[in-house]
Length: 459
Image 1 (tube, one colour):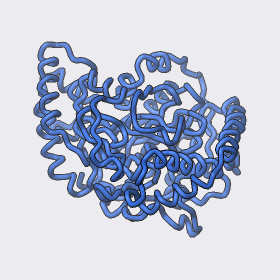
Image 2 (cartoon, helix red, strand yellow; image 1 turned 90 degrees about the horizontal axis):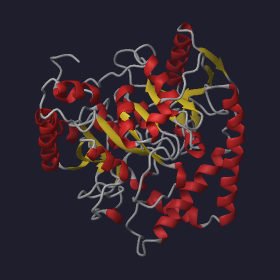
Image 3 (tube, rainbow, N blue to C red; image 1 turned 30 degrees about the horizontal axis):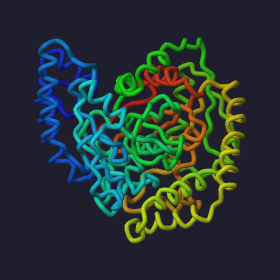
Image 4 (tube, rainbow, N blue to C red; image 1 turned 180 degrees about the vertical axis):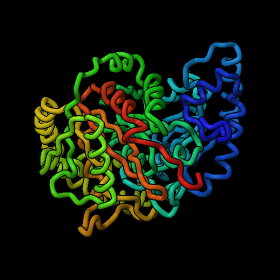
């Protein structure tokens, strides 16, 4: 860490070392709140700020550090929480007018674990309504911009979370990933975003699970070491067992440039290809696999899961009409027209996909893809209509990520090395289920050689 860099620019692990050397958590939170006041109006990342609670928690953290008894390596570290995760005493709107006044009295389990570890909960970050879209905008709080260019989207549904981390308003963000909602926004903002295996991070009581087991909680950070530190807290006690998995003498990696015939932005394609060339130069065994059609059946599965989830949720809210966006109205109508047979057929296709990917991971340890098929598009638009000259639908940019959710696999988006002035590009690495530790160790080993964080020009 450069001694001249501002306090808000430090990573979580840098904070821990600095606190041990006498830096006050109160000074960090005061500097962070000042930075939020100057920065948040530009990107609209944090929608509920708990300044007084953060300062009180910082004072308690400072005492623990003075007494030589920090609660964890995250004690005193500023953290934000996505607005579909419950935090005691703070509103949780899920980006919808239906929940505009909802305040919970208890923390969702990962939040409670962060709080018990001494992390400072700053507030809640913006989301699209019901977190089912790939950009971040809603009728309550408006549009979130990308810190690299606020006219562009940071993606979604964790757009507020990544905008907060990328602009220095927090060191870590707690978020959810139901179809790539951590990984794609991380790619759009030059961050590390981790989706753990299914059932690794227990959730406890929260909003209705409209995406079922597809959605998990995970962290967003500026470096892999911070991801590891966050997982040690929110995935305890399972995480120590996962990290104890033996290291393989030689990794076998499949590189898939695209799924089926899905178009990929030429900038992304070129950056990923250069990263793969460099990986091979470092001695990694990377085999290009093309064409790749194993994930094609998921195109028919994902709309069934998300649309029926929305229809089921709104059925619990009499009088919801007029309270949700037109896009949600369309999803509700589509979901209402689907049958139990359609839903079970979708789950049966997922089971078939599981068998196909079991065979893939019997041959390879990791699957590498781009994190997203499109570069950031205008912030107020739900999705890019064209990628590399080809018309695409609402999830044309999101083709690479949902497979990890459907199968419960761990996956991470890592920021590639890019030219100065270029927008970020992310590379996704997927491992077989419950090989989270192996995946994190791989990411940590090649961070700095293949993957690197850079600040936006004016965070």
